[in-house]
Amino acid sequence: MIATPETGMIGIAILFTLLLLGVRVGVALGLVGFGGLALILGMEPALIKSGVVVIDTFTRYELGTLPLFLFMAHIFFSIDASRDLFDSAAKFLGHRRGGLAYASIAGCGGFGAINGSSLATAATMGLVALPEMRKRGYSDSLATGTIAAGGTLGQMIPPSGALIVFGIIAETSIGELFTAAIVPGITQALLYFAVIFLLCRFRPGIAPAGERAGWGDRFRSLTRIWEIIALVILVIGGIASGWISPPEAAAIGAAGALATAAVRRRLNLVMLQEAFSETLKTSGMLYLIIVGALIFANFVGITGLADAAGETVASFGLGQLGTLFLIAALLLVLGSVLDGLALMLLTTPILLPIVSATGMSAIWFGIFITRAMEIGFVHPPLGMNLYVIQGVAKDVSIGRIFKGVLPFLASDFLHLILLIIFPALVYWLPATIGR
Image 1 (spheres, rainbow, N blue to C red):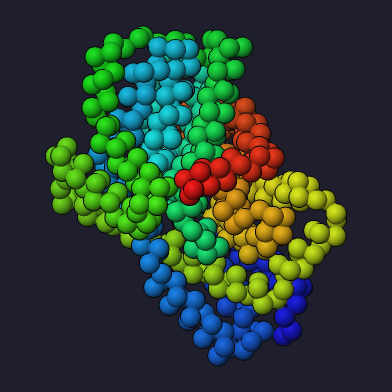
Image 2: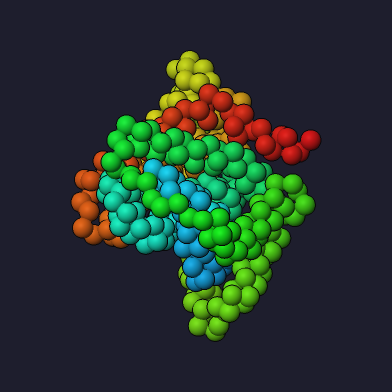
């Protein structure tokens, strides 16, 4: 078979079909990629090329970052770090109107920094924060919408599993991606705070003010999270400053999580077995996805589809902003029907050359596509975070959850636009630290 862009399009169509049939993302990517290589190059060259991809991937030093951060997250999950983070935020903010909603966003950001997963953050904070908000008279739509949206911070706040996967696929620095994600992560949380403020300002009844906690209670709550905060600052700050590499930071994070569990007398054989088991399961799934995506990327590269797509977009004469808005629209449409990682792995080999041609770097595109992935997690009707929240609050209709997340979804679109118009949101911190 001749390698042409049309061949690449046929491969993508087959990939979509497999995904819609429920085939796992990594398996579908690998099958289509290997099948395409076999048809174009022949079976033996395809086997050799795929074998080289597998060996090269599993011998990468930076790949060790993923299981270590996952292990750190599972250890913190087992010692109820999410509850401690929310309780501390609630002590400081709960007396304000909408204070528990603010605390939920802060808790999601804190837990996202040690977890790196949107779905896990939404599910865990839903179990912790949602009952408290409903008990205090918060409207169901605000409570569920806040946690569904806040859960997406798990993908952006470093260390992020999505950014690690992107860094490996795009062959770019994971440390720079983590550093570049800090300002977008903070501005995303601030926009969520603004949404809660405006909703409470115009509809005060949806979030009554609570009792003010004394300063003694506030400081006592900090004693339960200070080691978590210190470890996160050490890990993220060490990576951002260049003092330690991401794999070294991940090792420090895992060791620190074990030490924290030991100090709290929660470290035992059962907990360790569960943490190791969950880490291995998740790591194995992600490794399969990474290998499949790299094989698929080789197939797309051989067909010339990425170059053809770039030439087509350039022929529109949209300029930099127009091109980036077009890509954003495409990602949002695909994100409403594709799993987040599937969206990233399918589109990166095709869109990254187009983005690079506009003058944007792979670092910017990594943050941008991760942001688009996050919107897919809360975009009705298929946003996974919305159904995770419904699983926690079974008596709340999915329509009410959709309604609650809409104001936050509007802020997500605004944030995506700001990343396009002001790329310095991504570039400023890495450039400042790198001086």
